[in-house]
Amino acid sequence: MLGMSSLPLLGSLPAAAQDQTLRVFGYGDGADFKGLFDTFKKVSGVKVAYEGVPFPDLQNTIVQRFRTGNSGIDVFLVDPTYIPTFSKLGILADLTSAFREKSRGALFPSDVQGATYNGKMLTMPMWESTQLLFFNKRLLAKAGVEAPAISPDARMTWDKVIELAKKVQAAGAETGFGFEQVDRYYQLQILPESLGGGPGVKGDDLLTVDVANDAWLQAGKWYGSIFADGVASRGLTNSQEMRDLFKAGRLAFLVGGPWNIADFSKVEGLDYAAAPHPYFAGGKAETPSESFHLGVAADTPNTDQALKFLNYVGLDKDGALVASAGSNLLANIEATTEVLSRIPQQNPNLNGIDLLIRYELENTAVRRPRTLGYLQLEELVTRAWSDIRNGSDAAQTFPQLQSELERSFKRIER
Image 1 (tube, rainbow, N blue to C red):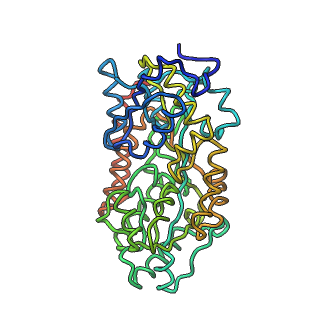
Image 2 (spheres, helix red, strand yellow):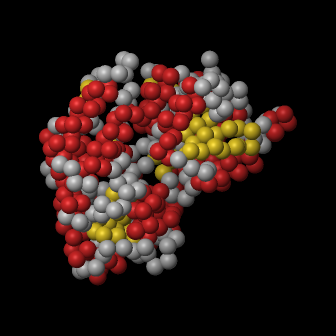
C-alpha cells in the first residue's frame, strides 16, 4: 500500500537521492514543463526526465504502457475523467494517506473531489480551467460593434454573439467566430448542458447513453448552423490554428481558455479583451472546467521522489506558481489567487477578468462525467460534432451516435 503520514521537506533529501531521475510521462515535448522541472531540481536535487506523445494519443498510450508490465513511468499526466478507468486497471497508486488531509484548504474542494474515486484520492490536481469569450477590439470598432462588458451580468446569448460576429465579418474580418478546441467534448459539452440535456450519459453508474434528447439535437443544430452560415470556418480544425488566427488579428470572437492570455498579450498590436462565456437563451450559464492532474504509477520504484514532486506541484504555492507557466489556472487556491491578480497588471484591457474567472469557477463550472465509458464517449461524441461541423444533420447524427455508444458501452465490464 502506498502512503506516508508526512512528506519530508524539499531540499532535505539524502545524498543518494541527488542522482535519482524521476520519469514523467505526458504529451508533447515537455517544453511547457521545463521551468517546473528545473526549479524542482534546484529545491529537491531530483532530476526529471520527460517523455511525451502527441496529445490525442496520451490516454491510450498510458493504458498500453502499463499493460506491457513495467511501464517505465513514475509520474504521469492524468485527465481526471479517466480516473475510473485507470483505477479499474490498477495503474494509479493510492494517494489518500499522503495527501487527502494536506489538501484540505490548500486545493479547491471540487478538485479534490474530482481526484477521488471510490473513497480514495488517486491523483494530485494540478491545473484548473474555465472558458472566456475573447474578442478583437479593433475589428469590432471597425464594424461599429460595441465591445462586450466583462461582468457576468453582461453575459450574451449564443445568438447575440453570432449576430455580432456576422457584423464584424461583413466589415472585413476573415472569420467571425470560433471555438478554440473546435469539436472536442471538453469545449462543447456545455452546449447541450446549457439547454438541460446533460453530459450525454446518465444513471447511477453513468453508463446509460443519452445523446439524442431534444437539447442535444437543438445544440447540434445551432452548432452546424454557424459553419453552414460561414461565420465559423470549416477549414480550421485544431486549437493551434484557431489561436494563430486570433493572434493574427483575423478572427473577431474566440471562445478559449485563460491559458492563452500570456501568449496573446505578447503579440504586438493585438488589441483584445474578454467577456463572459455565452449561453443559450432560456438555458443556464454553463462553463467547461477542470484540467490535468498528476498520478503516481502503481509500479514505480521511486515512490518517495514521486510524492515529493506531487507535493511541490500541487500543495506548495511556489511550485504551483511555476507550474502555471504564465496564465494557467491552478487547483492550488493561493496560487490561483496570485495568478489572477497578475493578469490585469499585464494587460489593462483585462481589468475585472480575475473577478469574472472566480465567478465562473464558483457558479457556472461544469465537470465532465466520471464514467467508465469516457474514452468511448469522448472519441465518438467528438467525431459526431466534427461530422455536424462538416455538414451532417444533427437530427440524424446524434441518434446514430446514441446507437453506436450503446453498442460500445455493452462491452464495458460493470
